Length: 256
Image 1 (tube, rainbow, N blue to C red):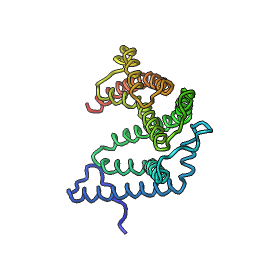
Image 2: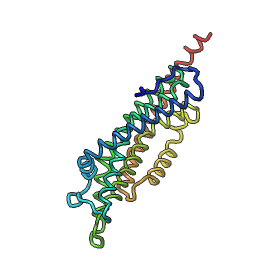
Image 3: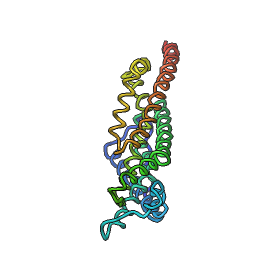
Image 4: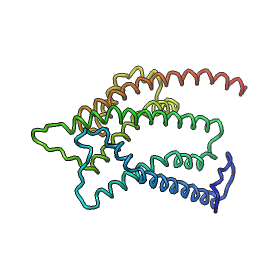
């Protein structure tokens, strides 16, 4: 049985065939991790479905299906999503190992630090979306105009809504890293961000309206963390610029 693909060293030369062989091995590991994650999720699909249904009102915990095979297909689809989420650390790690030889060790540490920050922000986004945003949005939507509508929540539509909202809020929580990247590239500066703060709030409001959430409650709950994260991004940019300014004279001294 072949072992795991070997990670190439920094700037290590390899033939095209060796790169393709490494890519094939990493794809095999990635697909294997997703398959194992999907099987594990399917074995525990009752717990997964109960966790996803928790934001629903008590009288809607049993969702509607409109086909003979829909309960099974929905369970398989949810298991695949959950399996991919379980395998995501392996997927990202295999991607990184493939591209890491092109990155010098100093930049590698920075990339890994940014990845750790992205993970923490993403976890915070999932927590905010699941425990704060979803229950309030679902409560509003499932109780809207009960005098004219009988709410039958279809399983596939509900799970698609949950995934879309959670993915959207995770993307929102990456705002500080996006701003930091633009500052590092010289596209933005902390002074520009502070000078055009009102414009930044307007842009974030427009993004909140474009994000998943067909009701004002969801949109408003998405907008609040976006404004807070935008404000935090300004201070992150200030700290980054100060550190870069202190590092520049030291680099010039070493170079001289």
